[in-house]
Image 1: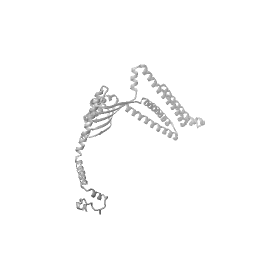
Image 2: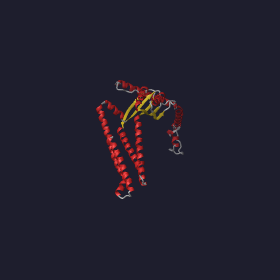
Image 3: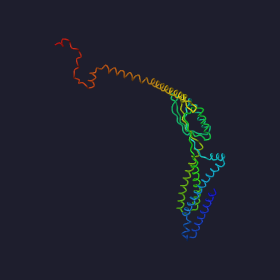
Image 4: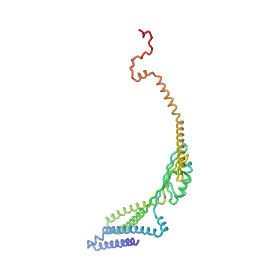
Amino acid sequence: MKRKLTALLCTGILCAGILTTGCGGSVNGGSNSNNADSGSPDAAQESYDMMMEEAESDMAADDSMDLREGSGEAALNGSTASTVKSQNQKLIFTYHYSVETKEFDSFYEKISKKTEQIGGYVENSETDGSASDGINRYAALTLRIPADQMQQMLSLLDSDSNVTYQSRSSENVTLQYVDMESHLKALRIEQKTLLELMEKADKLEDVIALQSQLTQIRYEIESYESQLRMYDNLVEYSTLYLNITEVDRTTTIASSKTSFFEEISNKFSDNLYAVGQWLRAAAIWLISSLPILLPLAVAILIAALLIKKTPIRNRKRRNGFLPDDMPAPDTEKPDADDTTD
């Protein structure tokens, strides 16, 4: 911190000296061209850029030194310092849960009320299926829950539903956050200095150049502030991706305490239930499709009978295999006398 204050103090003194020299050179009529160049806003800007680079490097070195000192103190002071350090960490937690429930409406209502009660909100919600049509419903929710209240929501899922899948991931963004804060501080110092130079500039081209730099710096400041707000939101509110499936029979989930034969029995029961559900669905489809299947079956039967009664030769003549003037063969058997002659 001492190096930061020294750098900022030196920057202010040098800028004031340069501006004072520039004003004196303009009053004396510009007798010395070197003095006039060093007192111009362009020269002041060049000197300012060099000083800002040095100040920024000093602040980055100080920040890294502070982090190293904080790590050393945490290692020396034991559990108390470790607790303080963990509180300063920027951790983003993400949860993925898939659950089953037999009471979709009441469970969905519980989730909504609990989210509002603990200070969270629903970021995205999608539902599918209809109870009136006999189709099991499905919901995909994206919930933003305060990080310190997430355990309450997870406890509700474990107690009021059958959890079929769960996972948790975390991302440490502390270094990115500290780096953005350092850049933001340097940009604000640079903005302040440019504003002071702009107030004392007397040439239009210098004012335009300084204004262009200020615009760019303001854009970068807003960008860094936006990213920091995004990180703050992600750290403060953990994200829970929740998939809810309505079922008539919950799936048996094997645990580490489940024996080999118990797991076989559970799988056999689940597969037997699945086959029964398939047969049930097939029977429902077949019965519900009878108004279409019966007329179609009757039409196919009539067509088959007509084709069977039609003589083969007539069918061949109709299909173009025999000429129309060819007489039909005499199917009568010859008499015995004709055979003798």
